[in-house]
Image (cartoon, rainbow, N blue to C red; front, side, top):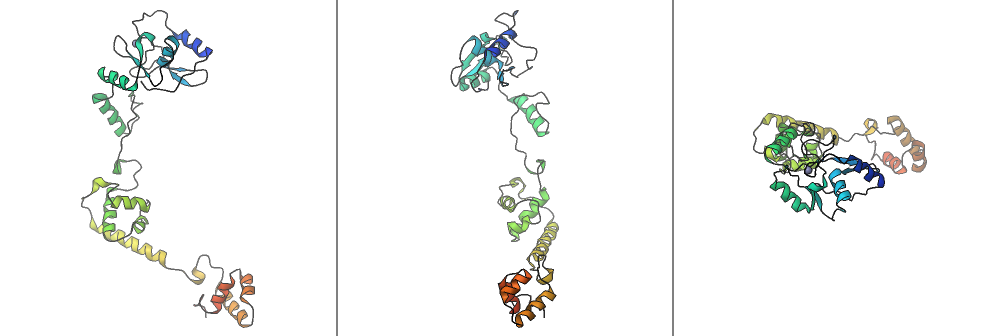
Length: 279
Ligand SMILES: [Zn+2]
């Protein structure tokens, strides 16, 4: 069924393909190779180029001629469609719409029982392929805690809503969770984890988190001066020496070079605008 790109066959490919043609089958019978997938899979053929082509398309190409542009090669097997079959007498070219219509008419579309089997496998995070289910490229959106990649719990989401309601910014809330502020914003707007709204949970946890944010904020907004500053180039001794040297007539530029700081910094130190805590 899936339409693929143009198949280019070499002489070697055609020879290899023709050797596979069953000699003992009537035109009524389906052609299946030993490696043909059982059930709903298509047979494939490895070409000289290394590409894998759908065998029924190759068959159409070899026995019936070029595949009309934009057409799928569909099956019409006498005993019910067999996607793995590549008997040219069972193949016809149709538009994708005709193909889908034909599949639906023959009950070959994926729905009902089989679809629910696939969904169950996907939800149980098993590979549908491992369970022998094909055509299982169904993207299932698993939201919330059930998502294996979830970094937040229901409780976290509840607390995020409550913290935002108490006036904390998304940035400050993000400081205590392993997610970006943008995600916090989406959660508070109900764009993420929207399915949780209205759940009442423990308010005391929110109090504790609010306290955690506040203490974090205090810690990060306290500017550290002088020698406590992790990148301090000077210490109390040096500052005193700078002031003395400046009083004795050294210029800010010379002192700046000597202590590896800017001349403006020397000026600030000498005017008591910087390192004011040093007597
Ligand atoms: Zn057939």
